[in-house]
Image (cartoon, rainbow, N blue to C red):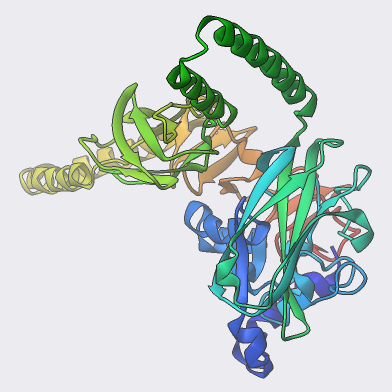
Length: 472
């Protein structure tokens, strides 16, 4: 991680206040981002709600406030943003920073995607005259742990436009090649027609290569359809209605609705549970199930369950997609979450304690001593060893490998030492681990020395990178 990329986080904030005033009107009023599948920039903005503002800021930078502002010089791949700064478009003319240019195999959230035709949908916050969109994918032999370079990408599709505003062209069907799989990056570039600028959106995808099975299935279906058609022609030559019905059924099967993925919790209270998931193909609406019973339906990919929920109670959820033919998909992943503790219970407990104290003045000293002892015992008893099967919410504390950790948000099966959803409470420096996420102020031991992190880091070796400073 270079010094210029990380230190410019502060510079970008000043830019938004002062230097940003020099950005031209054309740069300021033409903005947009890829909403589906969610780009790295848009994912960052969504993480504000899931992780909290400052945690999202540490990971994604200032783009969480402006996913539409990843704007840079056009001309990619011959020109455009310089190598190593493609994801941020060289900091978006000072509108964002360079944090998105950090590139490792495990850092970014990935969108599941199959090879073949995929639809990319933009959200234009300010439509602008447009010449074209062009899409690229990382090559088969690209290095996911190296800064992005223009030579890492190859063109997979171009959508020409007539120079009119973008709001007439929201979605593009692009063929994703079937000769690669696993982690890849798709780059969407939107060229503005009447300026020298373009908008850049990188999408981190987990690519599933499925062509051979699909082709084989298509061939078998075609053969079966051909045989069935011949039989039907011989037996019922005049049954046009049956032929039409069979055609409709085949069309429906060819466009089967896919199961929702990535079901997760956005927020919980003592009376509500906020759910979100990734959109399904060919879905007309979604059905939400709690403990096996349908509790709601929505056309969005988000749902707040607020019907007859009990505080401090665990519930199991999954979602199904339904197409226009009322065919339901398979279930999404199943999650279990727990409502928060009721505030009224806490108030009642406090009132009871107060009444108890007022009613036993003659034993105040004894009770105070006992209370203090009990508080100490309860505090130590309440901190238990981390359990991968348990659900933890914000403020829950656990012990893990001899250290004390506190949950930052809803989490389950995330090892505390990896710091995703956990912060270290113990005043101790643990041994540095290249897989662990460290935020500013974190301390580690490495080669017999103690180091403190200046900002967000993962995989940067203490003593070799500017992100770490030695603690004397």
